[in-house]
Structures are given as C-alpha cells and as structure tokens.
Amino acid sequence: MKYEWVIQKTIEWIESHLHEQISADDIDEVTGFSKYHFHRIFQSSVGMSVSEYIRMRRLANAASTLLHTEERIIDIAFYYQFESQETFTRAFKKLYCLPPGQYRKVMKTMRRNKEELIMEEKIKGWFISGSHPYNYEIGIDQKNVHQGKASGYLKSKTVHAPDEFATMMQQFKADEFRGMRIKLSGFIKTNNVKQFTGLWMRVDSASEDMLQFDNMSDRPILGTNSWNQYSIVLDVPANSAIISFGILLTGKGEVWLDGLSIEVVDNDTPTTHITFENHLLEGPTNLSFEE
Image (tube, rainbow, N blue to C red; front, side):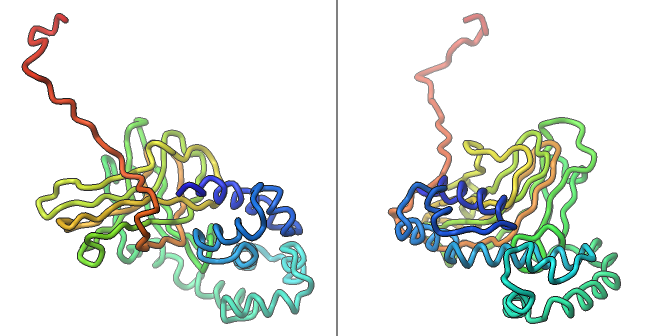
C-alpha cells in the first residue's frame, strides 16, 4: 500500500498519453524510481508489466472506437501508436480473438440485437442498495471499458440531497479467507462526482457484528477522473462469516468499475481498516445539557 500513490500517479499519466509514444525513460521521469525497482512494484500491484498495461489499455480504447465510431482501422492503429495495421491486427486478435474488422461487424450486430435486453438485465452477482437506491442506476457499459468488453457503472438519476447514496455491491461467505489478510483492488473512472465515491469492503461475524471496514472515506474520489487503480486491505478474523464489497456513490455523479480482484496478501501489507473509537465515560455527564 505504501507505493499506491506512485502507481496511481503513473496510471493517471499513462491514461492521458495513450495516443502518444511512451518510453521507459518517460515512466522513469514520472515515477522518480529506478526502472527495475518500479517495474517490480507495478507488476506486483497491477498484475502485468508497464508495457503490457499500456498495450492492453490502447487495445481496449481501440475496441471501443471500433464499436462507437466509423474511424478507419488503419487510423485507429496509428492513433494508438501501432507501427502498422498488421501489427495492430495481430495484437487485437490475440486479446479479443477476432481481427478488428470482424470484431466491429460482429459486436455491432450483437449490440443492435441485444441492446434493450442488456439494459434491462440484472448484473450477475451484483445488486444495488443504499439510502436511496431508487434514485440511482446500475448497469453494464460496453463503451467505457478499462479491460475486456464491459465495465459496471453506478450513476445518479434523481438525487435530491447531497447525503443520499447508493452502492453496487456483492456479498460472499468468508470461509475461504478466515485468518487471512485480503486485498480488494479495482479500476475506477468517474464523471462529475460531487460528494464522494470509492471502493468499500466490510467483514462481519455470523451475528452481523462489524469486524473490519473501509470505505475510502480518508481518500475519497471526487470530480472527473480517468481510469485508475484503487485498493482496500482488511483482515478476515477467525469468527468472520460474511464479506461484503462494492462501489459507493454519495450525491450526484457517475462512476465506472472494472478489473476487480480479491487476493490474499501477507501481513507486511498494511491494512486500511477504519477504527471507530468509542470513548466510554466514567459516569453520566451533562444530563441537563447546560455544560
């Protein structure tokens, strides 16, 4: 977690330069770390090398451009810094299992035939909750994607007060992770978030007592931001029963979520658990409310 700031800084820089040439020296200048040290940190955190990440993001953006514009394939290839249309086609086919032209035809046809169904379909494994869930909407977005073919989104519709909130969330049994420390990571993109958004995770006992919790309230995401990686680390005590997690949106705005993972980490990785301190009084105090 101590390197999260430099990972986020680097990803933010990469996102704004995907259509430009990016060299190893450019990355070194952004991070201020030695080349090999930072690449080990990035690989450990993101799960791929810096160069693999850049290529994956360029291909994801290219896939979205193929679906939502009529740009020529060769122009898309050059815009995202591929040497030729042939090089782009090989890389695209390796990731999406179809060459770009065929991908555009097949996926556009599928979108036309299934667009209404997709909009109404519940997202497998996910549900919406919160103080005013009916003022928010969750769904699948095939245009704003970090990796693969789709992302999930949570957005406000008719929010009336800044303290209204909703969450797109999941719950699962804690059995597999009892006695371990786990890390929830994911990529988030935001648009015009007024109050707050962030990942959250909670660990409860069988009696629904909260054992561990973090909602990124000490590092909130505000405004409009390109894709970046965020994470939460919590312990799962021996008496844990349920783990809940998701994305929280308070007030107005829109947030996208993609590429989530939950992994076991060692005890050298610091937790982000929020401690709620209860100050127990020595006895009754200020009963007349005049002090």
